[in-house]
Every structure is written in structure tokens, then in C-alpha cells.
Length: 315
Image (cartoon, rainbow, N blue to C red; front, side, top):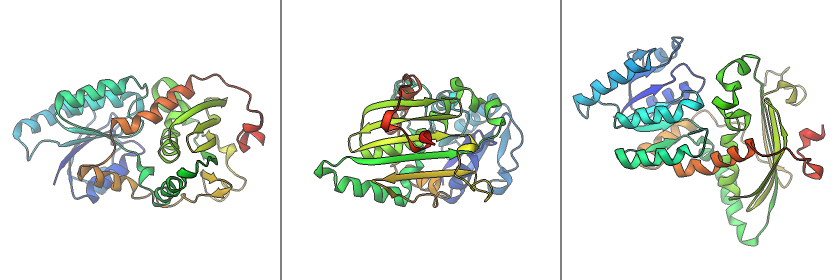
């Protein structure tokens, strides 16, 4: 059994980490969040020590570290706002614990090199959560694309992701591009990771739309030409979705064929945890391509799409 601590216990994604810690047979020794609406902890670890001040959380974990191997936190799971991720990875390193960090690992790509230096300095590892790489349908797609790579075929891909967010989104840190990395980073980085993981390195990139709630563009990858669209505006959902109680739409088509991956998301974080506990998992270099790509897209000029536009822009 390994000991975990979690930063950001009150956040949206925290329950997936709590479930993964529990379902892999491990223990949560401490949790922190500046907000105290963390009743979710009772569902997974009702006896965990909780702190609203990260300084007290840090002090408690340092005390456990000095008690020895059985008591110390071996992993710190980081579910805090994007712009705090690298600072909280540093906290984990100082405690001589591995960091398990939600995506994006960092907002600015140059911070990756600093984290790599900390790995070497402390002899610990920075893990990141790239859970779509664990999805069975997407694993099968990657194998299929790899099998046909020798023929030199470049696939036509259309990626669409719309997830409705209310006015709260733009009041919170998520609405600040400086803190979240904008819509491309906050809701898109795992899809950009997926595209590069399946279709190879980025050869060219264009941005056709860049707004606080929506982005779209074109990627030329080794094995695919990808038209992509991201939105947190509910008006971009397909007709009838909201009426049917469906606030999100995910679609990936390759050469006109829909790749179905709308189901099967419930245990992907647990699979990521199983991998890192077995000595595998995803690290800094796995995260680098997508973080560098999003940074590039955020600062790219908006160009006229011509015939390369995503279908959503045609509508």
C-alpha cells in the first residue's frame, strides 16, 4: 500500500483521482483545498486529514515524512488550477514524493525543463494524466493507423469537442487565459495529445477562429490532416442535445468514419494510476508535444480558412 496526498480536493476532477487511489488499494493521508466544500472525501476516505491552508498541509506532510517510509506520502496528486501545477509539483518534490499531475502539466512549455531538473535533483518522478491514451477504442485506432503507416497514407480527420459551460466559467480562473491557458489548453490539451500520439508529429498548424469560448483550426500531422473545433458555448451543441440532457459533444472522424469513444471514460484515471504504480505511466516528455502545440496555437495569427475550415465554421 502506498500513501497519497491530494491538492485541489474540491475541484471538478478530484473525484476521479480519489476513486483511482481507492480502487488501486492505496491510502489517502492528507487533502487540501482553499474551499471547504469537500464532502466528497467522505465517499472515498472519510478519515483523511483535511486542510484549507496549503502551508498547514505542507507542514503535516513534512511531519509524516520524518516519521519514516510507512508514514510519509509517496505520491502527491495535483488537481489544482492549471497555473499552480508547476508550483505544486515543486511542493511534492520537496516532500520527496512523486507528483501525479492533472493535465496540463504546465501552461508555459519552458517550465517543463525546470521540472525535469527537479526530477534529477530529488530523484523523484513527475507523472501526468493522459487518460485518453488508455481508452480501448483509441488504442485500437492508434494500432490501425500505425499498421497502415508504411503505405504513406495521410488521413482526413475532423475533431469536434463542445462542452457547455455557464457564466461561472468566465468568472473563475478557467476564464482567464493567463491562468488556464485558454480554451485550447483547458479543454483541448488532451485531444491535441491524442492527435499527436495517434498521427505523429506536427508539421504545420493554422488557427481559423480564436475567441474566449471557441477555437478552431487546421493541423498537418505526419499521418493526418486534422480540422479541429473546440467550444464551451452551448449554442455549438448539435440540435436536440440540451433538450435530451446531453451537455457535451465529442466527435472524431477519420476518412469519413466516426470513431466512437463517447463511452468508457469512467475508469480511465484508475488505469493511469495502475500504470504509474507499476513503474510505467506518462511523464514530462509525454506531455511536452501537446503543451508546446497549444502554446503555439494560442499565439498564432488567425488566418482565413478557405476550404480547410471545420464544418462548424461553415454553419
